[in-house]
Image (cartoon, rainbow, N blue to C red; front, side):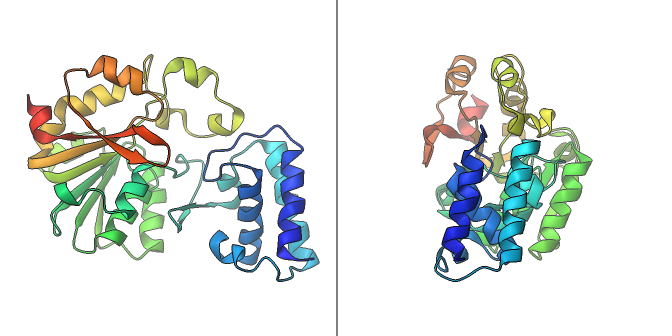
Length: 289
């Protein structure tokens, strides 16, 4: 059959079940393309250009088996495939870290941080997880010095694999520790700090579908109002920023809770595909007052 027909069959199987999406694919059609692409050992964008080509019966059957496993396990597809794509870049993916999907990635690729970031600047990816944002930073800005830190050793081990995969182990420094602890030990300062922290409020955590509960809870849960870790980040960020530096935070759907907790700040809200209330940039001067 054609690749297009195989994708449609896989999509039909996925749509027959009550699945939740959002881990790198927004619907059954996108996940079907992803599954088939993996069997062909190519990117989803490459597969889209070959829909009229044929696919072997063996590979088609493997794709259908993965779709069935997706339904039975309710695991995110990225964990089943061991890989996720972010802004067209592949990353190794395991349950030791949340699946890369931060909207900060859009801003990196579109060079939205240039007003705050010298060409040879220093960037910290705080709460790096599997290292995807740090990798994108290094790929998009070849002259940057990039540091990435996380509390989770399993997540950092996965990040190290992704650095190796993209030949960036000599350009990105990985640090282990709790928030600012490893940064303070080395007395580091940065032009830009990017962070996709745990920010889901407890009520929302209780209602998460199985696909999201399969991810590490500590990488998602942000306390009663989702702001527990963000309070710690904002309280000390200015100590680790250069004079004209900035902190970039992803807060997801927690805009109201953020405004209630930090109404004294004047963040710049950055436009991404999910809207203009998901990512904020806070300049160092604002954090110091």
